[in-house]
Length: 167
Picture 1 (cartoon, rainbow, N blue to C red):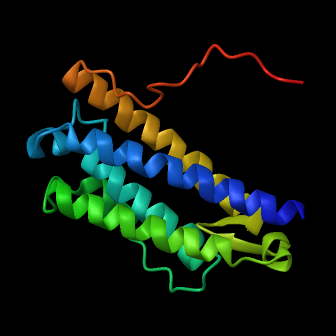
Picture 2 (tube, one colour):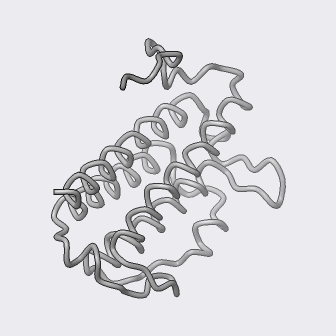
Picture 3 (cartoon, helix red, strand yellow):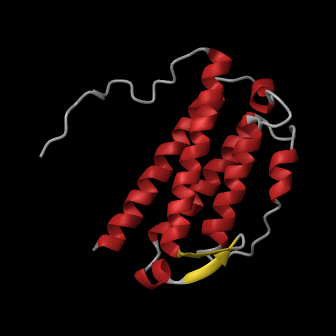
């Protein structure tokens, strides 16, 4: 069934990003995790809090029925308060809960329209948003980590990315 494949792929890609975030954070010092390059940018710590807030609002509340208690501005105004271990524990727990909710969704839930963060979306739209949003900010975290460390992150180590498509 296509809906089950969609849910499987969504969980796969959400799960793909978590170890990348963990790897990046583990390469950095506590200070680097909270460093902002300028007043109009976010630290990696802010991005992790933001990802937790977004996934909680969209999936755990929007699809899972939890109350929407998000305080979005606090995600960006934080300048510390959680260390690397606490940030990683928080995002790991949110991802686990998100994947559990996604794995239990039925087709009616995928098609039902609802209002999340002021936007009218179906369950499909909510899941697509969360997958792409997590990927987008994971890319920012990876880029910022590369700038700070001048290291290859090794996300595709051992893979032949020049392989041609099989038809």
